[in-house]
Structures are given as C-alpha cells and as structure tokens.
Image (cartoon, rainbow, N blue to C red; front, side):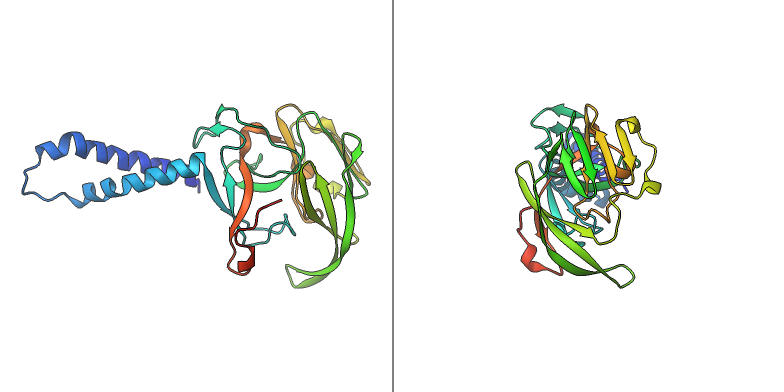
Length: 267
C-alpha cells in the first residue's frame, strides 16, 4: 500500500469538506441545526492530517526494519527516522526534487524506492556515488582504486531463519565520514553470480568468481547492505537513480525487544 498516496487523498478529501463547510454549508445552515457527522469528522481531522502530511513529506518519516540485510548496524524490528530534506526537497507522492540541498555521501545509510518495484522501500549503505568505480574482490572493498579501511573485529555465532547456527566474521569499516561494522558469513562467495540480474547500465559492471567491478553512472548510486552475504543490493539488481531517493536514516527511535537502542544515532 502506498501510504503517502493514501495520506494525500485523505488530505484532499478532508480539506475539500472543510473548505465546503467554511465557505458555503455553514452560511446556509440554520443556527439551531447541528453539524452532520460527515462534515464534523473531516473538519476535525483535517488539521491533524495536514500536520502529519507536512512532517512526513518534508521533515522526517518513520520506517521499520523488516530484514537482516543491514546487520549489525540495524536489527530486525528497529524503528528508524529518516531525514526527508537532507538530499533535497521533493514533491510528495511523485517524489520529484524541486530544491537541491545536498547529495548522498559515501557511507550514508539511505532509504530509497526499490528500482524493480518503486512501491517498496529499501534501506542500504551508499558505497559509490556518481562517477565512482566500486570494486569488491575476495570480500575486500575498494572505491576508485583505494582500499576501504577495514579491520577484523572477531567471530560470532548467529541464528538465521530455520534455526540454523552460522559462524560470521565482523569487520570494522570506515567509508567517508562513517565508521561502522559489517558482517560476513564464513564460506560464502563474495557474490552469487547466478543471482545477478539484467539491469540498466549493466555494461558498467564486470563480474567474475572473485567479485565485481562497477562504474557508477551519472545520477545513480551503488548500494550495499552491511550484512554482506545476506543482502540483496546493487550487486544483484543494479544502481539506484537519484529520483528514487527517499532520505537519510539518522536515528533509531524504538525497538520493542531492545530498549537500549532507543535514541541511537545511525552510523
């Protein structure tokens, strides 16, 4: 369900009823006649819907993390806040940028509309910006020929769906102004070649058993999950166009299972 569109339609409906009541119906109703419910409710809800619509469209929008693709940075069940104006002011619903503010930077955690299905929102980390050459070979990341600073941070055991115990390695990675952890599953290849799809600008990428090299086209971004071996990202379905950007994730505001995460800023 497109919640932004639904909210917009509710705003238009309640706003139309409120305007009709203010400029026409009220003047024609006898003083001793009560306001019908079908007028009273929309008029009452219109200011609330307007405030929610403006806040959600131009300032911040809440999201819930549904998968483990961003582990260990974001946990399943984290409720996060996304800054809607950092990357520019966009018209609600159609998501057309009308005012430039700043551009996504390497290392940012960004919410965007999935290129294959724009009704679905994804969250990943920005690895490459327009013009960058992203290389991921033998699970080591390079951007424009320079290794991304990475150091091991220990081995861990995790339970995956199906109650399977798997051993993972955690790494401390620094990209741009962001320092964060990534997770790698032992024994997994850097990329599953059979899962790579055909996508726009696919010729910008070269794949082999060791990994891949991709040059990011103008107006696009290369995204990867921090859970490197359990993430469907730009390695498989391609680049994210600027027009698909929703905003920058910046804070965890709730998690029912881990209250200590409330208020944690996202690196």
